Image (cartoon, rainbow, N blue to C red; front, side):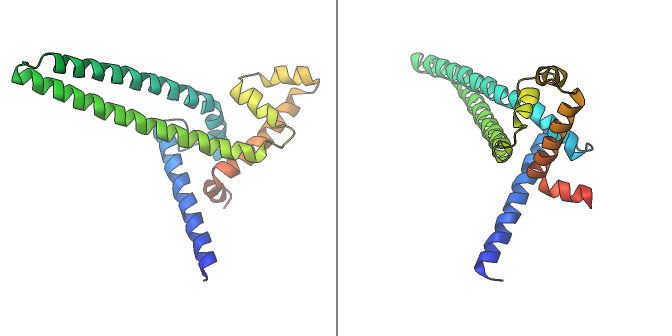
Length: 184
């Protein structure tokens, strides 16, 4: 094996590890379910996409509130330099607890950003598909496929078929290893 093939193999292994980490985290967060087909999990992931973005804003707000609490505790500690030793220890414990929570929340944001980037990269690969707008409308804008069918003057089964074809494409891009496992 030459260096190029070694690099390619290492790169494929790294991609598989990242996908496994993302999958395990999605299962842990109950966004996808272990027993479901990858088709169903892909649909669930698409439905949760906006919720992931929204939850990031909530976490950022929590961090801001914790930083304000921490600043308040810092100010109280500095104003009363004659704090009793026990109270000084309590303030330090509270500050440590707040700092740890902030770190945990920052790690959550990093994970969410990874999920969003991962999904965005996959979606960018199919954006040229003429039916891509259906994914955005159904999964991100929560439009009813039947209403879209009326608007486009076609049978709703046609809309569902087009959406399912796109979900099939997305599932292969999101979960290539799981797809291979499912068909073999």
